[in-house]
Length: 166
Image (cartoon, rainbow, N blue to C red; front, side, top):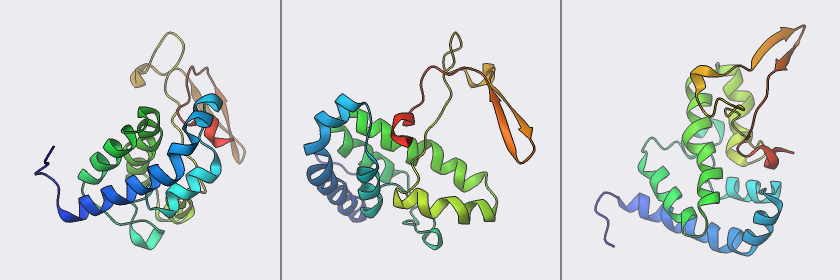
C-alpha cells in the first residue's frame, strides 16, 4: 500500500526498524515468547539501532525526533513480526519517554535518559490492579517515603516489560 503521510526520513527509519527486526528479533521470537521476556542484549541492540530513544534530545543520547509518525512507523514494522514486540517497545516510546521528557528535572534527565535511549535501562509500567483493571484514577497502591527510600504497598496484576527488567 502506498502511504502518503510519510516523508523520506520516515521511510529511512522504516528501513532501520525493518533491519533490526530481521537481524535481531525474527530469530529470537520463539525464545522470547517461551520466556515471556525480551532479553537485555536485545534491548541494548534496539538502543544501538536508535529504536528506544528517538524522541530523547540528542544531548541525552537520543535521536531528537519530534514527529509522532516515527512511532507509527516503528509500531507497524514491529507488528509485522509480532504485536508483542510493538507493545513492549511502544511502552518505551509512547508511554515512558513522554513521562521522562516532560515530568523530570534536568538532573533526572541527565541520570536516566542516556541509559533509556541506549537500552541499558529497561522500563516498565505498573498500572493494572486486581479488581480495578487499568483505571489509573482508581489505583490503590501507595508509595510512602521512608528515609532515603520508599515503601510501596499494593498489588499489581500485570507489569508490562516487568519480566525484561530483571
